Length: 409
Image (cartoon, rainbow, N blue to C red):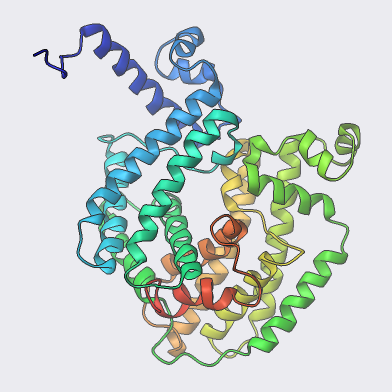
């Protein structure tokens, strides 16, 4: 009987080796510059080829991007394979986070390929989008199954799986602030926060009616202001990424011509920068309003819950910080600085809470990163559960991380 696992020919090995080089180079460039700002010529140059040689393997940039996403999902699924073998939900979540940091350490050391971030996944169209979205949905279901033994409510299960994956995706942004030797400690801090929340055993009561009133004020201000252009662009960029949110699509949603678009905006990069400015101004104003609360816990809860309601209101959403990676490098620095200031304010609230006893002893910087991702993830929660709204976002989405951990009932 013929051997179905025949050895690969030298030609096949050479083809697959070159293909691997292209995928690795493309992932690095996409993560650094964004898909929109990376050309096939740059990928070719990175592996010592001419552009036509790259198109022999991937005819279009979308084909290459889709291949990078699918390879990244294979990497994530390998991590899930290991975590699935653990006996409890707590151990599964812990293993997934720890192994992800171990992967990031290997990437930093150059012993493992760099997964491409899922920042612009929704900019794909046609068969590429179908393949990648199908594969991502399968990953989502596997991670959701991690939590099923601990969480029996369907909408909470979907919401928490989305939050866990969002935090996992964001860890590469956290990791760049640390040496790879520190990754095991950072992993334990993340596991602790994800599984146990950040509040003290008996945190102070929160005035939910007051939070709702404040949120209504911010929603009203944003709705009345002349920023419909920015809001529409924000929605479209969150939905389809920087590449997918074309000038034509933005103009069409506002019933404008392309000429009218360029009357208001010199280019799309400037529009994204303006969308970030709107988002940061809202977040800073919410944090400033909450800063007068009596405890660090109350400051944090008030700001996060107001932002959560805003995200799901008619004035929302806020622009996801993942859009930053798609901007030209020249525009990123100031925007990143403003984003860091938002995170630092959350860090300050957490430190206040640790001092006054309303927040348990956690790493403030890592907890603030997780809180930022909680707010960020609400911009696309509707893809994973349509049953979360301003009335129940606290219980379904915010409290698990803020209070008791994502496996709490």
